[in-house]
Length: 162
Image (cartoon, rainbow, N blue to C red; front, top):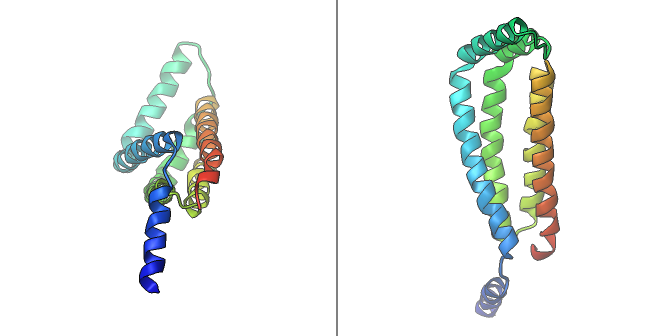
């Protein structure tokens, strides 16, 4: 009896094929998650130099007559909360990896994990770091649009998951 059930489950898994579009999305996500983890690790160790670079950029922009707004509050928040934000981004990326692996294996629960941990780091970054100025606002908007696009594209593939 148990052997019949196990064989049935194996046959069902063999008959389910991952759509090519879902395969491409998962591969892109694997690459993106890897880049996000590496980037967050590097950024966590370079917060001081990032703050210095932000302030130098602001000075250069102001000297050239271009004003995108002040980087001061963003730099202060980055100094105070940067390690926490980047650490959470690493954690969220690892959980995202689990979600994508589940979707790779056609498990619907992976999609719900993906939604939460794709959007939560963006929201927490805004809460702790703030918009600060035009450039950080644009960066957030593009990040949000990109994340939302992947959530929607994965959502289109939900019908292939169980």
